[in-house]
Image (cartoon, rainbow, N blue to C red; front, top):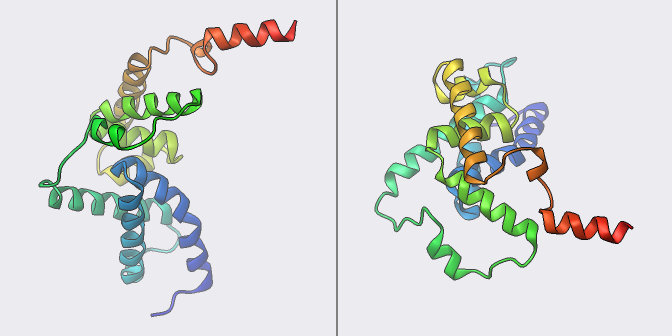
Length: 182
């Protein structure tokens, strides 16, 4: 089977977004890479089913999402580590504040219900419109909007973000920077 160069380039251009989505779903880089590879293989095997002129990324993200859910059902017997405590004991904790903030964000993201996390990642991180995310998830646009809104509110509460001033450096760092500027 041969794929025309334009389609090949479009598939390759989708890989970074697919990988980011797969990492956010699985929480493991190795599994995410496997998911992306399986997604591309399945897409290539079924390329004749793709309707040219429609959204290739949405089609690929739907394949990846379906593969993830199928794999999740198969892996139920594996040891789960939803709060990251096991993984936390196996790795060196980062020393830089940004890494700690990212870990806090990741933990908060993992505390969201799966449907809210998925909707937020599709719309907020992957850049899909509400309509495209609804098609990928197989639900109504209003449902996606509601899930994204609830996810954003819950994340803000979990991270104790009350406003824009809570983003970026903490108060102590801002004070030190202001003092240094004087």
